[in-house]
Length: 297
Image 1: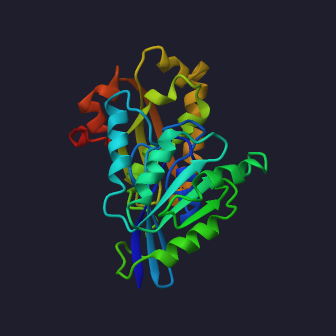
Image 2: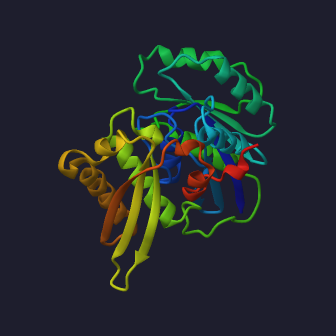
């Protein structure tokens, strides 16, 4: 039996969550085209014949601007501690910079199997991919450099095989039927937030949080969810609600569809919009939403 933890890191919007979802074969983390979608460390668990690989999806590496983003950075940086392997996701559609160089060099020195995933190779000119690979091909400590498309799944199997090969001997950390360490309550909040990210304009989503007030599974199999969509500014509330409530209904409808697919049963979802001014710097609201400010140094 082989098992181990694999940190999946990289800058914001590099495609880490999409890659983890592809590696596990299940939706572990929400995704969107907006940077900093992932806020917590989330485990994606891949179970196979004789192995268990636990991928740690992390918030994107960025410069913190408030208490929430400080929390996110600590979640990201802490994911590298004590892992058995690492994957750095490099977005191929952007020129690498000194921050990429520094993080890649640091991971290469950990003396663990380390894969550089050059992602989004499907959206760039063919000559761009070799240039990205050439920049890091001589870095000692990189086990493999793999051009991938996390969106389409191209070459994800190569990364999966490299990780399975590198896993140390050990017992399973989680039951075989688990694909994430997170609860359904957490997943519901994340799915609602994902649908808000997809449907709302650019200026709103960064200040959005979701709080699950009630999550109940009835005897008839119906799941009842009551949730608050929390925003920072008074001007954002009518945008989230939309004309005649159309936007909030669309967010709710999209979320309900995915939640029913996830739970395998009918979901009754009620959404409310609450204003919590500057909540990303408010410890009590952060704690309510599951972002523990005690982790901040």
